[in-house]
Amino acid sequence: MATLAPHQPAEIAPTHWTEGNPSPDELAHIPGEGGWPVVGNTFKMLADPHGFTRRAVEKYGRVYKNKAFGGWNIALIGADANELVLFDRQKLFSSEQGWGPILDQLFPRGLMLMDFDHHRVDRRALSIAFKPGPMRHYSGSLNRGIAKRMDEWGAGNLQFYPAIKELTLDLAADSFIGIPWGPEADRINEAFVYMVQASVAPVRKPLPFTLMRKGVKGREFLVDYFTKETHRRRAEGGGQDMFSQFATAEYEDGSLMPVDEVVDHMNFLMMAAHDTITSSATSLVWLLAKNPEWQEKLRQEIASVTGGLDASGKPRDLAYEDLGKLELTEMAFKEALRMVPPVPSTPRRALRSFEYGGYRIPAGAHVGINAHFVHHEEEHWETPHEFNPMHFTPEAVKARHKYAWIPFGGGAHMCLGLHFAYMQVKVLMAQMLPRYRIELAGGDPDWQAWPIPKPKDGLKVVLKKI
Image (cartoon, rainbow, N blue to C red; front, top):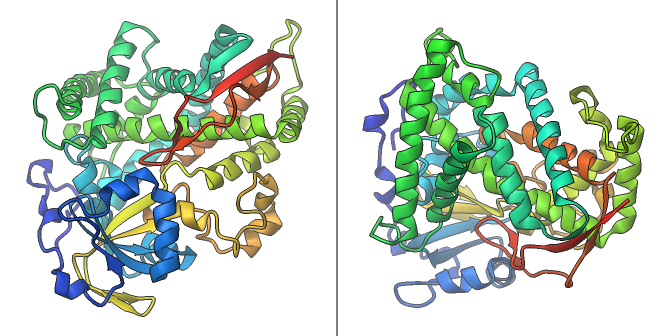
């Protein structure tokens, strides 16, 4: 199966991820079950994805087949499986062909839908947006935007998930695109929301009145917007925001990235940051509300690093240079990512046959690893089902399998924006915890586990002014 060469025109990108699937006979030796006719185990998985995985591992072991969402998938479960697939020493697995059937209509040619040399070249060009200079600029935008929103929230009842989702989108308009909050940002945000919702919609064709239709229209709007803006920013010299950095990014030979690729990378990055940061910030706030002793530890650490409140009684900004000093805050965030990984499972496709766990997996097989399962295994975690940031002391990390914790993926496809995610959540905590104590209102919520975790009630909390 061929892969894209660097600089290959986007118009001839392959669409071969639906071809060459293994026959049932080629998978017959792998244990598992097909479920109901036509739909397979799709509805069982959607009803309880974590329970489904747990039961399958207990019944079939750490390699099993499962028919869902229109085809067969081979689950590879465990830290060793994570390392095999993510580190991918032998270049066996295609991320493009794993994610493509899910994302290609809305987010084609994003970094996650690239493999090998094409991925490496584009990733290196885009990494300029995460160098210290731009990151320092983003930190200023985050402090300003989050401080303003914390004051607007005020003390009292709050439905946290939709509130942080709206804030994350507004922060992205500022830090990512470099435009002020307002009608233009609202229109862009609306288009992104439709695209993200459509990416997991059950109807995969853009028929009238469907989510997919809204998503495709949203993509058309953003392609037009980002195309015009790329030309403008190149002509005017760009700026410090992430989009301007992408628009002026150069390959190693000094050539500019093609405009359509800049547009696709920007669309993908906004999607990748949008719901994942919303989910992970929500899980951290939920767990801190349930564990007030840790909430207080973080509050004290923040005060010691920032200097506490200023003369007007407001929290001081978290300086870019001080991000690394919030060690307990980072440990708490990592523990939240362990307990509720924003991407619970990861698909790939086997480009060649390989052996794992005593089974031969044929070329063309769709395979998947499961972060959530490994994040809760007793062999790696002292208290796998309890919030315990001490899981992330340097000693504990050193002693653990390197691929037992994979909220940001791993290997060549490790999340490019992971340091931005750490920064945004640390600034959120530095602006929020000195102002408010966070308590749950209405009990512990149930969580929608897939595709990106979120509390079904929106996470009802009470903010109590300190």
